[in-house]
Image (cartoon, rainbow, N blue to C red):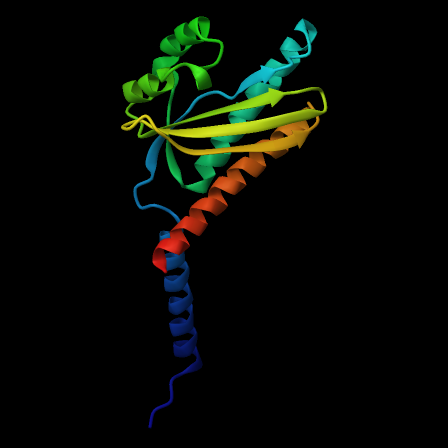
Length: 185
């Protein structure tokens, strides 16, 4: 009887681990991720006065970049570039206080860009200490809200906002993984 070589056993073990990891990764991430339009994060509530406008705009820019970058790394969505609709977005911002509350204008933008879903998110500032980050996913076809969640956080500063965005994306990623594993069982 011929005994398998150690090298042969190692190759079989390596192939098994690779197939298992590949299979696990495929069950956690969609083969064809939906096209997601991520609109800029907005700031509502007590804005703290006109002297804070430049600081808040810089913080919103940081949050927007972090959100898009982090979402793209999850593999959950194919992010849609909003640049072609920039003039439409600016016109709507002039007309509505918030795009997350504009009677479906976010859906019109998403349709124009060929997105399946649109993500609107906003930070509500109660004070310099108490804030919340809320997000909604809207299905472009039905117009329905498919997901909504709010996270409280403390501190109107770059670190707190960045942590809130990171937590939101991590929660979305974990929720998708949980839903995926529940479908298997």
